[in-house]
Image 1 (cartoon, rainbow, N blue to C red):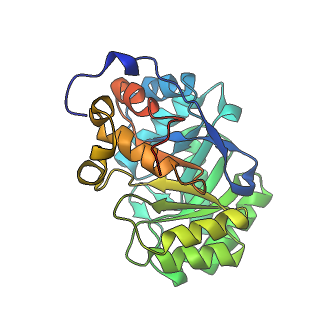
Image 2 (image 1 turned 90 degrees about the horizontal axis):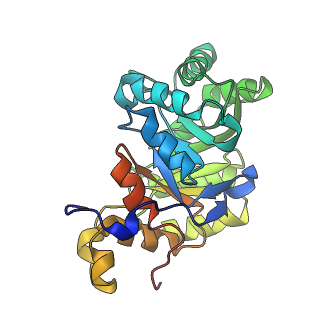
Length: 269
């Protein structure tokens, strides 16, 4: 949104929660991406407004984002679903990383977040089946799960090979959540994969939801709605009943108002 915020957005709260596959969690339909977070009070505000899912990663703001998330969730850890990545502050773990290296990277994440466990670990920005099914990732995850340090396994992708990766992830039975780029310029086979994911109990989290929104659908919305093409884009994403929720980067209090105003609202499909 480029202009001043609208008064109607002030104090906006999450209105809708959807099942996140077989995890047993009901996810806020608008959720918190922490890639630019430096102030824990912004996340605290979002949590106060009903957000209950936070996407984190060690390489966000050179791990400063994780520390801010950790401060924000203190005292309400059981009310927040925390997703992270097989990653270090220097970048994504290679599929050739050893099991001890993967486990240490996750334990370092727990230290920065000041928590005993993460709810979800993604094989992040996955662009090949080989990386998706890398034995060391899966063995490390199983050990972490046994130790109570990680609950669910996921995969995220916004690459050209996205469809092949997610089709394999859903069919494998190993993944509880897929996090996919999903927007007006989305991959043609993605909707079919989402249907199958829902049938198999795999949660679907949407990201990169703003691409193309401004040019594609704003004519379908009222002048007030066109004030925020983010809201228009979010409504479009959430018309899909196979989407559990979407993650959007939030770093300022005004974005909490603007983005959460789209919660629970539907565009005409």
